[in-house]
Length: 102
Image 1 (spheres, rainbow, N blue to C red):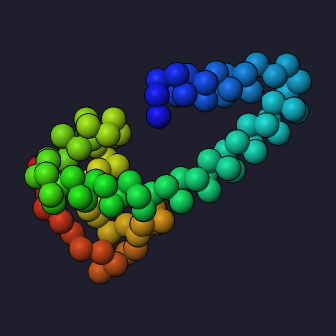
Image 2 (cartoon, rainbow, N blue to C red):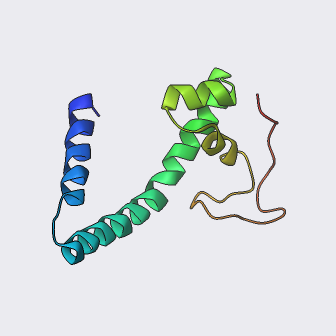
């Protein structure tokens, strides 16, 4: 995604914040948040696979992966903790604990 495409998405979100009528603004925000929640669940497995591949195949540290993907270090760490690919906690034994922060 180009910087221009990111800017257009950001501009669209900013436009929602400028809706004068509070009820209409909240309705629009609620729809966007619901859609984004669904996207987050759909996109999480791909992000987790990429994080794990970068660590396994390229030998990148957690910090290097976070910097390269421009995500928080905690997101990278979560990819190696007991979380399912849907982003939900799997509980004890639900996943394999990987190496500590690299």
